[in-house]
Length: 151
Image (cartoon, rainbow, N blue to C red; front, side, top):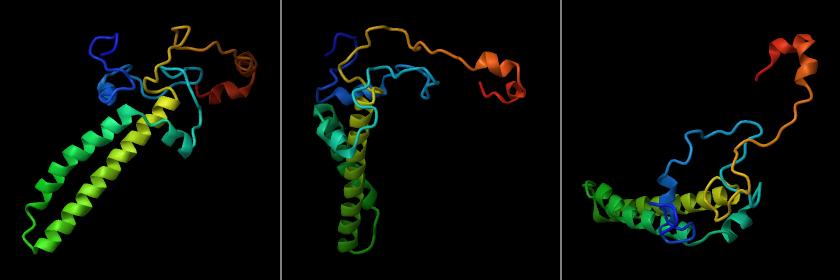
């Protein structure tokens, strides 16, 4: 268990359960706001994402695969055609669920690299807004463009 109550270490087999904790109600970040955790790589490649897979991602994949076996089995029991069709349907359903588990694991790895999931790092300053200087709003107030401003 982590130092925070009810959370798991980010690199443990059950670390993916932290995805269910609501850290912040806002999903989209405004200009000048930073993600909740420090960014390791801002635009990771597929190779970066695959190299960053850890125990939490494997736990996510293993859980989805395990539960997907029973879901695929239950969903194909109702097929009243031949045994071959039932086996083929189970195979397709279970492989699809395993691919979804692999996709979830890669998404978790990508979010960890970009700072949207706990990556073991902490910001030095706790405030969410970055210092941003606005040099154009004073100029825009004196022109017609003040009526077209989106902010």
